[in-house]
Amino acid sequence: MRLSSSFSRLALSACLTSAMAFSAPTAGKGPLASAGPLAFGPNGVLFIGDSVAANIVALETHDAKPAETAPKIDIQGINQKVAAMLGTTAGEILINDVKVNPISKNVYLSVSRGRGPEAMPVLLKVDASGQISEVSLERAQYSVIAVPNAPNAVPGGRNPRLDTITQMAYLDGNVLVAGLSNEEFSSNLRTIPYPFKEAAKGASVEIYHGSHGRFETNSPVRTFVPMKIQNKPYIVAAYTCTPLVTIPMSELKPGAKVKGTTVAELGAGNRPLDMIAYRKDSHDYILMANSSHGVMKLKADHLENYKGITAQTEVTGVPFEGLASLTGVKHLTSLDAGNALILSEANGMMDLRSIPLP
Image: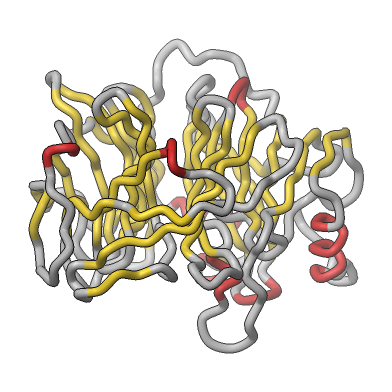
């Protein structure tokens, strides 16, 4: 999808946020001002986080033919291949997220063509043969819902608007949305029913950050996984620098102020990038990619047994091991019960490949 230079990004954003939700075949340039976090829902529906417009787009991919087996994926230099397809250089694209359609096992990438506020959003699909194609949103069928209380755009420096949506997941009829709001306690978790009707105000989240030695309310969840703890639904969330926090989903009511339980400190000077939960050999694990600390495999059995951290500390809590064989991982996502998909970078080249779950 390419937007003409004469089409105003501001006008697009205003147009989309003027209605809470709509669903119909559409014409024109499609619904996106930006393409960020991705999540799959029922029947191949793909949720796309658009922080610039403060919207979530639910795209009917019509990609619901079950795959017999998950493909083995190994695409070297995928950033260069994508750049060539889009008529630019690898340095002028960003791959913002990677997700696997759990039905078809096709891979979807959200991409920015260009840098800065003029970057164009692009959605790509990689099939079992490794063929990369653009998913056109012109005349696509989709619905859109505005994210309430989004932070205002701030020119210069770190723009909080870009953290309106930091990650999403679909669970039991709801889209779970992590990010920032414009409220005093700006760290926010929203639960939005799908099909879209309306989006209520999210819950503000407070955590204790052991490395910083203080309670925090304005740092967004960077990545999370839904998990059951003692048969009750929780969100296990990771923040910058890197506290790991459990948050009961039963408390995520509109307008609520929720206090998460910090069950681990995993190291300062680090930003968690992606995480998945899986079960292997009758044990639960979390696999987490990080900006500075590589890929961690955390033991996730009986997270309820870890006492909440409430005093300044360094690395402690849930045990983990570093996986030295996995380097430069920027994104990771589930492929099937036994395999993950990773996007890794080395010397400016990005590779997309499947790996056995460790």
